[in-house]
Image (cartoon, rainbow, N blue to C red; front, side):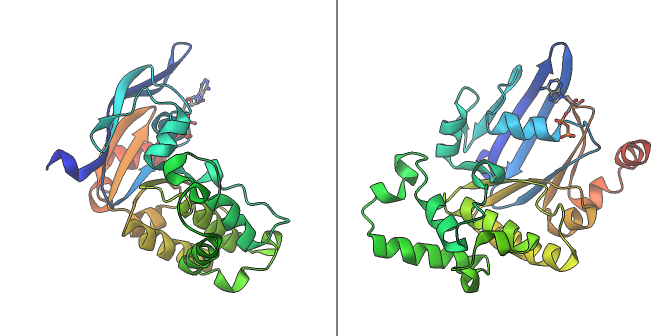
Length: 249
Ligand code: ADP
């Protein structure tokens, strides 16, 4: 495949904490406009990998390219400016504000010039319009004036996605988007993630394997800090090493 097919290319990614390798020599390629899942037993290195991509942690070795550009040495804020946003980074839902105000604040978050809404030429009128568009996109338009605290878990998750979308990320990292959700909300959020992925790229850590099976174009399975298997669900779910890692954990 052409190099351009991949939005993220991590090579030899390694993170060592006082002699212990949480992530060891991981190669990870994420296709543009795909939904890519990172799975694996507890302690596999999924969170560490997320933190390495967003630069919350600096790798001990290896490099990360985003759109072909080496971002290994960037600070977290600069990674965010490039367009890689992890949902919880900005997803703190302010419970006493309304749903609409939460999105409005996200739109005005001082991430940097290119994302900085109020520094753009757009008027306040357009800000309201943009809030409506985002709420509509996540199915919360009818909840605009309600306090965020009153939302169901599923709708709070949708609001978190709206506040992330407010930053117009090219790539969205979702940390267990389905945790704590009931069946109906899982369906709703799945639909939303699919919609988002039509224009952006999603990398998610998710424990719910039926969700992973239904949503992912590609999966990287980590175990003990290394890549155990990768490919579409049909491939990795048949991989004996994967089966063993899950049963053995
Ligand atoms: P996962 O998200 O897949 O459960 P993590 O990336 O959180 O796995 O952790 C991978 C391994 O690295 C675990 O054994 C964990 O205890 C260890 N680890 C993670 N962060 C640190 C740290 N800051 N210091 C020491 N060990 C860590």
